Image (cartoon, rainbow, N blue to C red; front, top):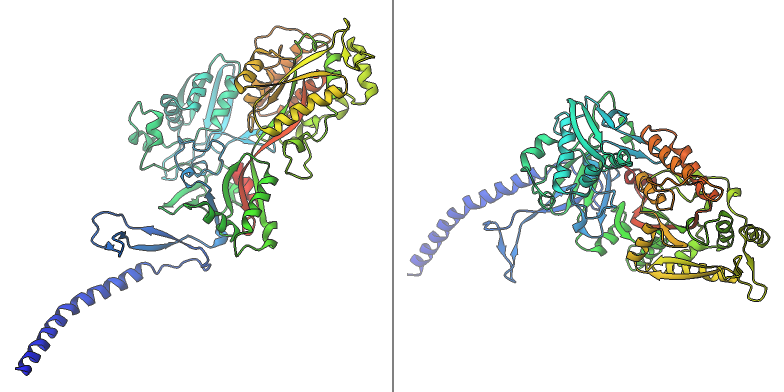
Amino acid sequence: MMCKLREKCECGRRTVLRAKIPCFLLLLFFAFTLLAGCSEPSSSNSEASATVSETPSGDDPGTVPGEDSEVIEPKFYVGLPGEREDRFSIAYAQAENLTLNPFLDVQETDVFMPHNFVYDKLLHYNKSGGLYESNILESIDLNGSELHLRLYSDISFHNGFSLSANDVIQTFLLYQSSGHELGQQLDESTASFSMDDNFTIRVILSDNENAALTLFDCMGKIPILPYQIWGARIPAGTDLKALQEINPLPAIGSGPYRLLREDDYVLILEKLTQQTENVNQAFYDNYPQYLVYYKYQRGDLALAALAHNDLDILLRPEDAHPLEAKEDILESFADIPFWEQSSAENIFTLSVQEKRMGIALNPASEHLERISARRAVQSILLRLANTQQGLYPRVPNIVSLPAGNQLTLPSILPHTLTRVDYQLLPDTSPQMTNIYLSESGWERDPLSGLIVDENDEIVELDFYYPVSTTELSNVCRQIADIAKENGLAIVAREVSADEWQKRLQERDYDLIYMESLADESLPQMISRIQLWPGLEAWSEQEDNSDFAAESGRNLLRQCRNDALAFNSIIAHLKDLNVFLIENNLFIPLGIAYETGGIGNVQYFSSDLSEDLQNH
């Protein structure tokens, strides 16, 4: 009986074994197949050369329930392209800020957004040379209110289709019809645009005095889209919200990079140099072969990657001076076990925004309509030293930009190009201040020491500034204190941002805090300078001994005209600087910065980071 039972069991095991052998062979075959599929060469650097990709979730029979009843999805590793030295690695402090959608301005100031490298624009502003350049436009001809844009005939999108005038026009129309801010600027600056031929666009400008400059500003910001793809994907009348939710996105442009791959963990762009006779592609020779955007879900992991040389740039906007931001980041590295203090010299910060800060003097004010009075006030207020240090108290050894460079910003020209003779500035010695007072009919009251006018009334100036930062408020109050110590009664009035803007627009002040927009463009700069009474485009005020209003308007007009001609803008901006100084209209306080990122130079220089930032 036992023998029969053993025979029966052995027979059963042989039956089961025969059934298992095919399954085992099938699994073995699948394993070898998977290994063969993953056996492509990978980077010789193994430190961080892989990302994780997941199969889609759902009713996949390959999923296995874990002990905690959660579904565990099978994963495999996909190696990154090239060597570490070929990959410029970028991450966002907030992963949701990464987007390829040109209509989704999560961070308006983020110049590292991948769509800036995938899509090209009609114009780029060369900050070092002070002129517009283009990889798409062969020529621009302006005749009165008519503008002709001639495209190179051999520019192609990444899919091989030629870039034509129709692509430009349809892109403009899409921005206009969607209600995008840049489309609204197109509405303000153009009356119409049409095709003369496949590579020529004719634009009729609006009657707005700044129409051409506003259009140029748009041409430097609007990415040209391949209409043969976007036109088929986007229904007529699509609004901005729908454009911002396009999925999947047809990420094809004519820029120096094309989309290589995107998954849940990484987005990769590959450099693609066009073979064209007309465009100088040597500009991109120093660009890395790949731009790799990591999608870290936790900020501490991104910081650790930066400290470990796995990242070249961590994009983390901060309303702080770059030197202050660097100190903060190095302090946070102190808690990372593998961080070496000797590597601190590799860390640098990027400033993505600058704005000019100062005090405007109102030449239409009852107290300041005489130029000698404005000169006396400037003579006193220019004694206020270290205002930049007051704006950034945590940053040691900071030096404010000299007063002679009071106009220029990086988005217009480098600081050094519009430097003027500092002897044009009022003398700040007490002796010269007294001479300026005498010329204005003012004098010091012998009892109180305060400055009084011809009627022996105390000269009291209202100084308005907005509620902003504690540091700015402290500097503005310090200005009033310095003035009072020198006998000038200035009443510092902190007001809401709305009231401050209203007083600027209505020219209702004696003194007022004035700041440029961050990375101010040429049209924005002209609009700001037109805030002074007499410099408005519609003003008919003539030159007089106290204020050369007509000359100022002519300078602004020359800046507009010569900016379009791509020349002479530097000389006119110098003249504009001299005009503000000679008419005693502005007292510079310093520069406000915003830090845009933290970098590591282990693999790529900070110069390359700036080149990519200025692309």
